Image 1 (cartoon, rainbow, N blue to C red):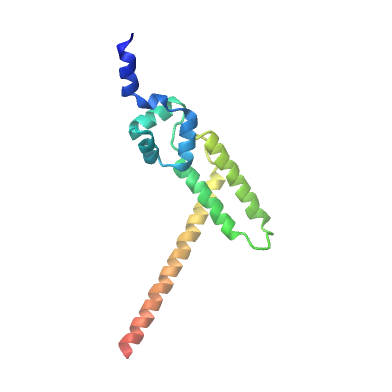
Image 2 (cartoon, rainbow, N blue to C red; image 1 turned 120 degrees about the vertical axis):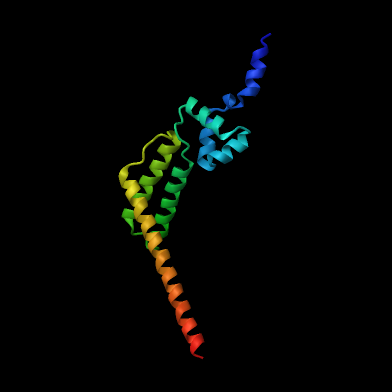
Length: 147
């Protein structure tokens, strides 16, 4: 009987973690949450990921793509004549599938540019709302001071 085999299993619990389990986890959890669920440290989990061919944890990338899809869906008109937007949603959904299948898949530059444009629009809208609110505060303060 080999005394080292039981010791090795306890010392390296991440060795029993399959690529399938990891792929399920990276679609729904941050790497920190996945490590906690599996009862291993983040470093050990990263090491196991590299051993099974996962070079980076794609959770944030998947989350970003899914947020892009939600943003585009919000832009769809009720009449449903937005073929360009529908096509963009389908393309991003394909990229999500490819990232799930292969976490090292590189998202094309045009998708990054679309994401940047969405961030910029969201930021500008937020800034515009903030400016309106501060203008309203200024007006109410001025009115309150003149009474």
